[in-house]
Amino acid sequence: MKSAEFGEFDAIIASAQNIYLIESKWDNISRPEKEAIALKEKQELRHRVFSWYLMHWKRKYSKNWQRFVREHEKNFQKEFQGKPIARTGLLVANLEFVLSKLNQQCMGFSSANNIKNVLLFFRRDKKSGFPFRIGSIFEPIILEYGEEMAGNFISLDSKT
Image: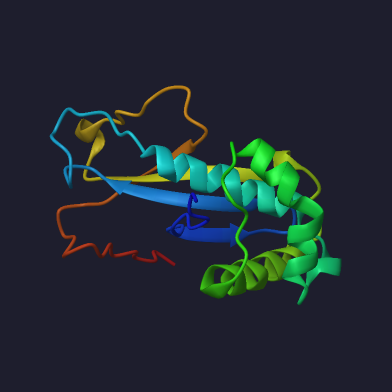
């Protein structure tokens, strides 16, 4: 049986209308200098699966995951080539909690257009470029950091 597990996001941000599912990459870390950024297939699948959960989750399922499974399992398996919908355990508890919170927080959410898949690309300077694969489901956002960075921490200085 294929696993229902699909990993975790680097961040999820909810506004009044949109939900941002975020992955992040750093320049010059874990890839050669000129190599294009390529997110793993499982990262894109994670976004597609979670987006599907978001589109089908309704308040009536809060505290009743098994009802959600009964009503949606066939459609889920059809959409994801036989991959099982999450049934029990920590993944279900986490999904139910996050989906319920997002449903409460993002009152203007109404369609797949309100789900934004984002890749945050942290680069040292403009010379790093942005070697990103075209055609990805992710919207890239570039964040520059300077030489004063220590470890993976970026100083955000307020000029006010």
